[in-house]
Image (tube, rainbow, N blue to C red; front, side, top):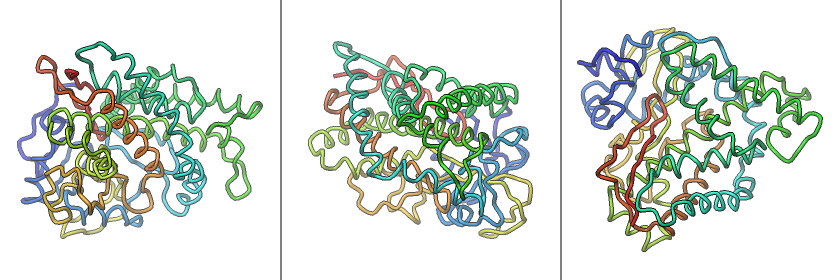
Length: 394
């Protein structure tokens, strides 16, 4: 990321690409929540940042004043590249989302658990005999890449290509139109070729499902399918590997939680929900399409909103001891998978992958800690998770 003017006033000039925000945003959000619950910046062509759960919820449910046609905050306006349903507003959103639902029901996702476990065990087998590894690169980042490739019916060995596109679209592309356009065009070409193949030779995969599925009696357009496939590839990989990496980071620096999970594996479902709450990876964006007021703050048409589900999840008005990770927390209505019509259709998949990844890791590596000779590197942009997580094994 190129050098940026430092932030001196988080309330009126915040920058989510500032190194301090990238490294540890939680104290910044806590201070804003107390002093200025809805911050604003002129950077990125004008952006609002609500930090309270109720304000985030109000915006997420208000599709009249806040549009999803732009879901990433950038320094310039990119060409429209629809990725339904995430970039769709009513009334087009419902049919675009409905077509995805059969592939992501709990029953449908359960059919992928065996392959997910196999992937985790294959990755862990590579660590046999090693005293250290990068838990993000060698493990967390590999799992969703392979699982989503398996579901789409594309080669798992294309994972390096997928990782390149994700970094270019969600990180480097925020400040570079050229990088963003190149990555999107490469993805369009990649999926166009496979869509053509599936029309002639359908298989048991998501690409075949989409090219033969109809909405209101009509086959889905090439642009619609391509946009949805790009969404599934990016959303199905980066968010989940970030979540798995954050879970492993927490367990590496909180040995009591790690030891308790090893001793009490029945706590795993509660722990997964708590990790999802405390380390929610995704901040979405909305475009203000009609002026409105929320919590006394005027939202000006044409500007953007960083809709921070991670900040909402740290609101003490909603969650007792919000900044404390309690792995057996029972009441946990977190916003990690979104609120309103755009609640994540892939939540069942993400939960399964995180649970399996942690179960298999702790079964093979019950003791691990951060490598004092290494440096943890967190991602830049609106999906947060460790990109580098050096740990000592055993």
